[in-house]
Amino acid sequence: MPRIHLLATGGTIASRRGPGGLASVTPAADLLAAAGPLDGLTVTSSDLRTVGSFALTTADLRELVTEVRRCLAEDVDGVVVTHGTDTMEESAFLADLVHDDPRPVVVTGAQRPFDSPAPDGPRNLADALRVAAAPVARDAGVLLCFDGLAFAARGVRKVETLRSGAFAAPGRGPVLRVDGEAVTALARPVRGPALPLDLKAELPRVDVVPLYLGADDALLRAAVTAGAAGVVLEAFGAGNATPAVAAAAAGLVAGGTPVLVCSRVPSGPVAPLYTGGGGADLARDGAVLAGDLSAWQARLLLAAALAVAPHDPLAVVRDHLSTGNPTPHRLDGEQG
Ligand code: ASP
Image (cartoon, rainbow, N blue to C red; front, top):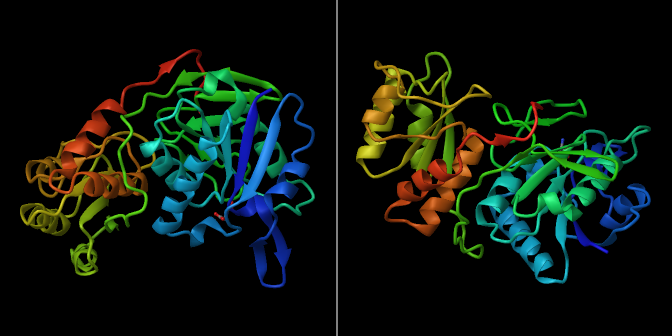
């Protein structure tokens, strides 16, 4: 019988209403009990923390990934992590960047609290446990399971603040569907090579600088003053910036600080199209266009790349972008 370990970290799935607002207080054993009977599975559980994911730090994230590895070192077939939805796509992505094990790690959570009259957490957890035990999830890396679908870590985003279908992978779609005990493959995620990241060492600081109409270079300069070793621009459209930000980014690259370019648009890749502050100028001046990665996943990729290859982080970034960016092979016509 497949043996799965549940590692709980908090989030709405564990939250109850209190005088000050929702608080993540429910332990893993109670989450598991609420998920109902899980015939054919043996599930063990433990609590790493009970916290809203908006309060997590990158140090917490390294600790989480370390703990996932410790769980995998036990005799288990997969690990499920319950986590707040706000930063779930970041935790899943960093865990996936270093995951070099065929056994799945499946992250899940909820949009409605544990004490809601109609909670979505119990079903999401039951689905995630089924996915973690499913042979089709082997070699798929870290997955995010929510509302009956599982997504590859790379490219998944929270797209709804309150509704139960909280996640999507724009332009990519889900990789698995869960209907009760049936887990069906829709597409196979293609992933970059696992990075040999030392999880004991602090990640270098990388900041995300958003573009908005008329943006000057003040935030970019502030990031560097705060100690950023790299910067991700959350640029307009297909990867364009204001002339002021583009000029400041060129200065950073010339001074040895890597700059990645993502888009504030939820779907589609960035491209070197426009001059006058656009993506063509950014690419010409040495910024790296980061495909369809979200700015916050790109931030973790750049931080990990700076940690594993301080003298040539962009080689790691480019390698990851080229091997992890093919069109997924779809097994049916489903789109997420
Ligand atoms: N809305 C969040 C959740 O679903 C809060 C958090 O990220 O912890 O859990």
